[in-house]
Length: 107
Image (cartoon, rainbow, N blue to C red; front, top):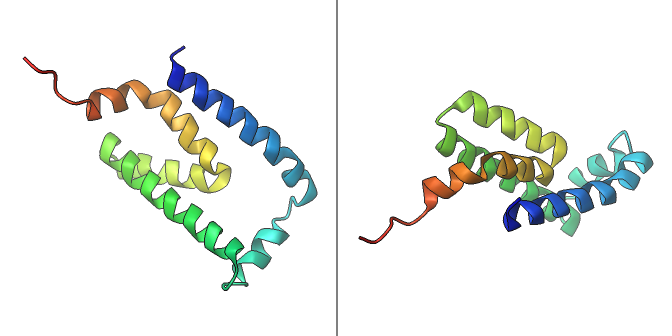
């Protein structure tokens, strides 16, 4: 396994481990819903920043896959799982990203 994949897997595991107590403590998302009603707080700003990142992630998937259906699917998954969805996408497509965005080889 390559170094970027190892880093992504470790970050994904840490994120899941940190998420478990939160999911157990607030399974109905009541804290999240109260954050949305407090627009002058940092919690709202961080949440809106996260959602903006999900939109950018959806655009990136669309550009790479050329499929609106696939981009929407990953956007929905990102909204359900958060950044781990992006980590999973990277793990599944890191070689495709490398070949798409790698600089051309010099002759």
